[in-house]
Image (cartoon, rainbow, N blue to C red; front, side):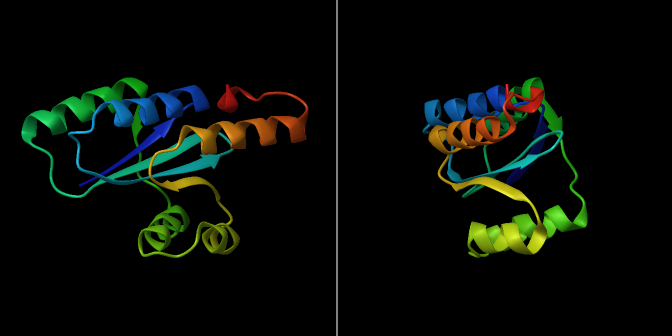
Length: 129
């Protein structure tokens, strides 16, 4: 089962990571985080289908933080490439996307990206708040 959402900022993205860590009963396979100029795209893939109750709860939680997302073909290809085992560096070069994290949800990847990006700009854009 795949869940693909668009979130407005880094804080919401970090909340998803915290939620997934607090729910070890969810059969999480991986989480992909991609930063775009106007927000964050998150793909959460489960190893197996969730129960109807888990599915409803997870969709409700994600719906509070963001909106379901239907990516353009370039982003679809980038997500597919990551899922098939291509390295994030190769995917970033080929599809010109900022892959922040892929695999186990990791707050430190998101926080490091936010810090590096903000240092480079000299200010904090709304999407990195």
